[in-house]
Image (spheres, rainbow, N blue to C red):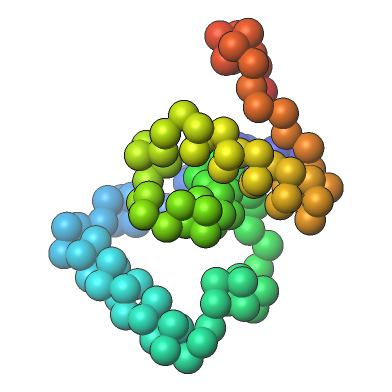
Length: 126
């Protein structure tokens, strides 16, 4: 059974109440709580590396969590003044990818990902 089939099974068990989107108040509260958690972790000297190593559940890598948890910290280390990948110059984007791909993905995880070619971008290849 693939992940999509598993998700569909679990979706069948959700009540209509569980399918409602979070409220604006919940969203604001979540971000305030996360800000407080980040502050408290910083005050105790807990880095994200330490926090993630304590996570006892398997987290499947996705485009979004790889970007947020792995690529963006690398971006911040290289370019502290840049807050979003959308704000990177073309040169910064290439330097970030080279550092992330070579120094992190390849050297530390054994994962090789080539920068997508124009052809692969047009064809929707994976």
